[in-house]
Image (cartoon, rainbow, N blue to C red; front, side, top):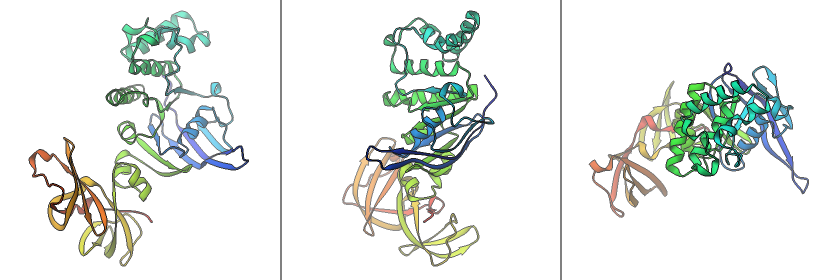
Amino acid sequence: MKDKIKVELRNLTKTFVTNKNDQVRAVDNVNLTINPGEFVCLLGPSGCGKTTTLRMLAGFEIPTSGEIFIGDRNVANLTPDKRDTAMVFQNYALFPHLNVYDNIAYGLKLQKLPKAEIRERVDKILKLMKMEDFALRVPSEMSGGQQQRVSLARALIMESGVLLFDEPLSNLDAKLRIHMRDEIRKIQKQVGISSIYVTHDQEEAMGLSDKIVIMRDGTIQQVGSPREIYQKPVNEFVAQFIGRANILEGTIVADNKDRVSLDIHGVVYETERTTGHGAGDRVKFMIRPESFLIGGKDFTAPVTKSVFMGSHHEYEVELFGKIFEISENNPMRKVTIDVGENLSFSMDPNSIHILEQ
């Protein structure tokens, strides 16, 4: 494989004109750096601009303005074949009449490489993908997961500097999707190729990424590691989009450099300072369902929902005119609270995260 490649998007913008002559800005002044060998997921709801961004990287869309650097080359106006990229598609895009070997070898044959080199490279990639026994099968004789492996092998064999993924697992069932997710991550780490992956599946992004890019309305909301995005979202949109979140309000009653005291309906918790707010400010904060301490004495509320989920027990309680989502891990060791009964709980101060307004 080639040396690891850096990718940079600089002020990248794409505007579409509708049939009513209205202008829609699908991607709005996006700046992003993908470090060499990094696996980055573009994540967001439908229409957020993630797929358009990927298509501009691949060369299927030309930017309205801005630059795309792959290595030290601005490729923003180049056709797909002139870029150092390879794409793994959602629908596999395999030739149905060709067997696995010929599907994988197709791009090398177009380059008119010597037959001996083609065979050596195909054999190597089949071994990497653990598909040596599938070389003579045609796509109709394989499962969806096996076909996706072939699609990945066909992209990897071109030895491009950057690998692009367009929601490649969305056609697979849940169990196979998890297995293929792990396989893709393992292979990507093995070959060390810089990768950009589009998905709307939060768990997929968490399980694959070195870095997650949260997009909304064509703009980047936050860039960070899966842990940073989950534990320290910058705003309410990110908090609600990744996992489940309780968004509440409180008043900062004291602040001391890195810590603040937050009054939540008469109960004061000391927690980490995450914004520029100070004493007297009314703020919104987030706490995840698993960050409540069941059995704590700070709050008591009637249970409106009680559902056993196996690995955890989900509750909803109503307090201060709001619904709190609370999750109990390892419920087999605990007493279950039924609907209509009261649940006592506190909040873990270190899991309270104050949001930017």
